[in-house]
Image (cartoon, rainbow, N blue to C red; front, side, top):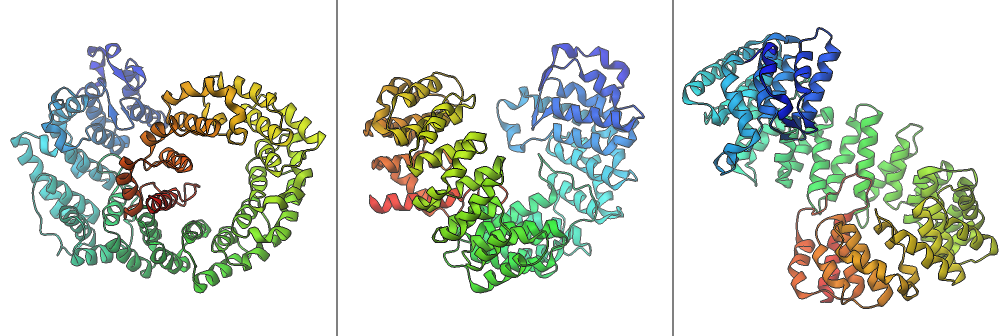
Length: 621
């Protein structure tokens, strides 16, 4: 370890970090010694951002290690944080050590430095603070396989002492995990300490792989039901904490995962551990919705606080959409929560709407919100006579931002009945409230008035380019005059930037947009995937020929949002090349979700769309 007095011996200006020259690193290291805790915290934050940026290290990272090690000893108030910085700086995949590029890599240089100073850091294994001891164990684990033989013997002796005598069970469990990194197997499944048994079971599960042995699941179900009461669940590598690692391991075996989650929920769902595990399983695996929803409903009475309860209800609302016919018991439970006069009634009512229970309509009409009305319109389009007047009233009251957008979007499922809202849509366009979606809906309504077409013509001059595009298309739909639309799109497509936003609006113009082809054809080779998809779509809409669009779309098809868009566009052309069939089969029959689906994402069920479309195309082949 090296004191700050020697900082000027390093040519920091010749080294780099995430933001360029590393000449600011010496001042940050000096700040670690300040008695002002805020100053030291800010310095650590900056160091995490520059010499270790999102998992990457730089030429300045290794020279900083001996100075950070010195600060560990002499800045004790920040000892745990500094130890964790050293651990993440040296984080690496042990398999990388045998690769040709390893020796010359920045992370190898960091590990060399950490191995050199590690003996002077092992005193932290006896620190009075449990967080410091846990962080020190992670430092040892980070370079376990790289230590010279003599250091290994010394480190393992100290780890044995921690494992045998530390007063905190979670620290003993950590010591056992680190001993495993050294190849030391410990017969810990019979330990009297549940934290140690849990860690031992996790190690055994990682070695065995799925399907997991039932006896190990029994240990995890019994000993993992409650979180560690401490607040120092440091990551072992990257950003994976012990709890995150446990969830990831379990979700590799969905049956085992749901079995453990059920036992955790029965035990009280402490810290919502069982619920989180259920949701992680649902996000990872297809066709588990029935079991997932049963468990989430069972977890509702155990939630501590409105925030946790609302989170579970939102998850139920997300997954219940995938059930063809949600059972009556589930819908009754949601109706009970939705009818309560509490802040969690909103997410419960949204879940009830998503379950297609007609009792939801009465509640939505009694206490409408933009999101509820939009969901009700999607699931109950036959209730136009009840919903449209409320949507109009909310729009007339001056809804703005996302609420206005949701309300206008709620009109789309009603088809011709949505024309009732013409005055409100015109007002939205006039006041620029949800103007883009209002323009689209006006075009779709097909009711041409002088006021409407004049407003749309004016909107094609807006400083909001997305509004220009939407207004130009709507103006064409209502007037049949293509020239204003062509002028607008020539200007938009001549610009740099997100041209796919404008290309995606072109479909209603069809062949009338042929003069735009010289602007669209070069975009088939654009670097941005979304632009290539939109250009291929536009080319097909205009020409009606799939010849040039299909090769571009085939190349982009994949289990991603843009890949799904490409597959939809390909399906519209009616051309599915034979070489794509194996890919479609993987989309159709994978037991894993290929596009992440989460109640937190706010997106539709893209993976379900991918699977359904793939199966449709395979059946038509």
